[in-house]
Image (cartoon, one colour):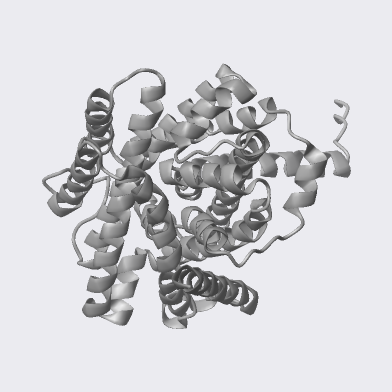
Length: 426
C-alpha cells in the first residue's frame, strides 16, 4: 500500500486560495480599468496646469489645502457617474434627455459645446507653448498634433485608443519628479496642507473657483459615463469601476499638488510674475535647473495632446447621446457620421484658433476653467436627481452620505461663484 502523501495544513490552503483570489481580483481590475483613470488624468490638461501653476506662483501654498475637499468631491461625483453608467447602460446626456426633455437638454448641450470648445483651444495652446520651449514653431506643432489626435481616434477602436490614453497617464510622473527636484520644506507644506486659508478677495475667490472647475470639470461627468458604457461594463463590474474612479481621482490630485508646490517654492518665493504654464516652465530654469524646465514642458505637451484627444471626444459623445445619434469608438465613420463629424469639427476649430496671431490665449485658458466651475453646480443638480431615481438606479440609488457631500459641493460652488462675482463688481 502506497503511503498517503502529506496534506497541506488548513492555514496554508487558505493562504494559497487567498493569494489566488488576490491575483484574480488584480487581474480583473487591470482588465477593466480605463474610464476612471483616463477621465481624471485628462483633467490635468493645459488649462489645468496653467491654473495650478498660477495658484502656486501667485498665492504660494495657501490654496494647497483645497485639494483635500476637492479630491473627496471628485471621488463622490465620478463614482456616481460610473454607477449610473454600469446600472443604466446609458450616457449622462441620454438620461438627462429622457428625464428632463429635449428643451433643457438642448440648452445644456449649447453651453457644454462652447465651454468645451474653449477648453479644446487651451489644449492646442498648451501644445504650441510646450514645443516652443524646444524651439518648434506653433505653425508646425499645432497642425501636426491636430492631425495626430484626429487620426488616433478616427482610425482606432475603443480598446486601441484606451491603451494609448493609459500610457499617456504614466507620463504625469514628470511633475512629481519636478516637485522633488525643487527640494521643498515638507514641514511647511504639511502645515499649509492641513490649515485652511480663505480670503474674500476677487482674485483669491476666482482662483478657488478655477481650481474646482479645472479639477471637477463638467465634461468629465459626461465622458466618464459614456466611456463606461462604451467599454461595456455591467453591474457585476461595479466594484472595479469604483476602484478605477478612486485611484484616478487620487492620482490626479497628487499631480496637482506637486504642480502647485513646485511653483510655490520656486516662482512665488522668487517674486516672479507668470501668466502661463510656459512661463512657469521657463522660470524654473534658474530656480530649479534646466532639467526641471524640460520635465515641466514635457508634462505640458503630454497633457495637452492627451486632453486635445479627449475633450472633443467627450463633446461628440455628449451631444450625440443627447440627440439619439450613434456614438461609439467601435463604429466606423460611415456608421456614426455625426459622432466623428463633431469630433473632427472640435479639433479643426480648436487648432485653427491657435494659428491666429495675437489671439488672447491666456484669458481663454484660465477663464474656461472658471466657467467650468460656474457650470458644474447645474450639472450636479441633474446628476443628483437621476442618481436618486429608483426607476433608473434601483438598489444602486444614492445613500444619504453621498447626497450630503454632493449637496455641500453644489452649495460651496454656488457660494464661491456668487462671492467672486459680488466682490468683482464691488
